[in-house]
Image (tube, rainbow, N blue to C red; front, side, top):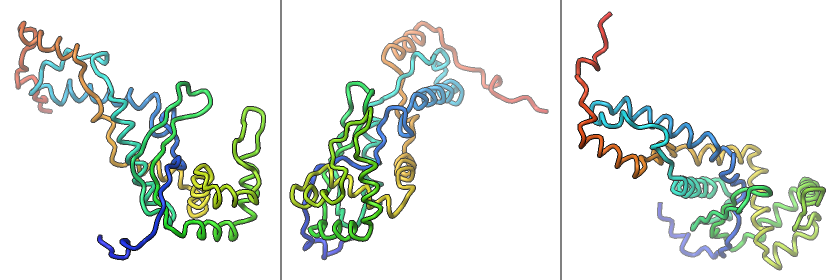
Length: 241
């Protein structure tokens, strides 16, 4: 709905890592079973539900079916950003241009989602207010989250008292992203799971399954050679009890 007040809202945009995005390597967004079951179910659909219209699909095997991973990841990332934006603090006016940053190897981190996030002009005042109200919790949380230990090297300050400089003077996007995450978590302790579930709500993995070119060529040749025959409708009728 158009709101004329939005025309006068001052803002600033930062390209930040979107909090709570879990990545696609063995997460609820994408794991080793996602494409497996999508392919298996789609193959079942093609060979049984489509057998009258496309009897040629009877010769398909799981090796003839593949999954559009890139398209799936792109659509899920866009969906995640939309639900994140909806659940973000009021100082977030918008978020667009999602980009997935994937590691070469998944030894140390998962995929990360970055986007241009537009913050209201008074975002610093709101964050200062949040810090003041939740100081004790943030003091402990920041120390626990950002203190290096064996196997983890922190590149962020673990003292909340030093965050004001990083946030409000340097405008370091790492700290802005993390503070937005803390604000969202304080409002909803289940925000991580809610974002994932809501992002997947309208995503149907089966729609990313397709018949490979080699398989389609083999099907066409089988049809041309008369190796595929239409079913007798009588064979498709269930026997009466």
